[in-house]
Image 1 (tube, rainbow, N blue to C red):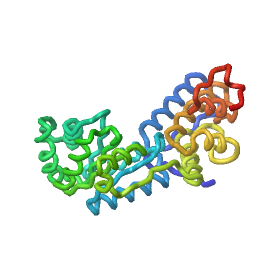
Image 2 (cartoon, rainbow, N blue to C red):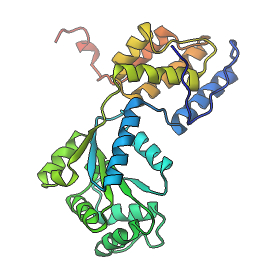
Image 3 (cartoon, rainbow, N blue to C red):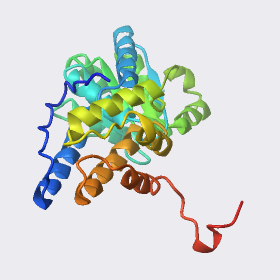
Image 4 (cartoon, helix red, strand yellow):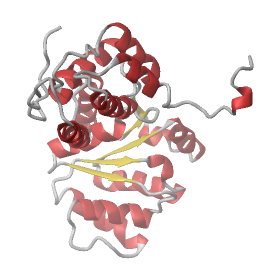
Length: 284
């Protein structure tokens, strides 16, 4: 398979085969930092960016729905970072009111007066978006918004004609439908798990451009791929957690690659419900 290039992050220097304890720890810390700070491009994310571009250009509202750990938030943050002057991105707090949400957005666009009364904040924000060059507002964790906040977001769009995009899980659709707001955010993007080809390309990118271990792990094929596919279900957030721990334990045990048996043991511990010992051998 052709080695991919991670354009957002310089490649990590490949280490010599023999790794002492300090080098092992340093390598794992380096990998964790790269996973935290860099963006891993996927076909799914590229399709999502094109969808956001269309809404921004057409001045329309929409919603992104998908399960946890599939990369919705990280992709949204990256889109904002790549187009900083035109996009505002905020994450809603639990039971977030209009006042709290609009203060967050005003702070995000660096408005000099981000606080105040609810009745003042919406018109202030509506009048500021065009002035500040904002073409799109992305609200993550939109499931947390109170009814008044969702209604005020609709009104914000009506007043400013700036695209408003909500990001959340399946419950977001139910909330919007209950409040008769589904048609106000009618355009849907389903941000689902990575499909097999995209998952394999992503693993290839991770192996060569992030892990850069002394020996090939062949994450994207064979038994190791099957373990990762089964344990993560194509969710990139869970993939990062499993691989980071698998690298640490593989290096500690003297391997220069991700060891299959170690990976399997670690993967089996993620996403599993606790079963009491007395029930583990019972057939349900």
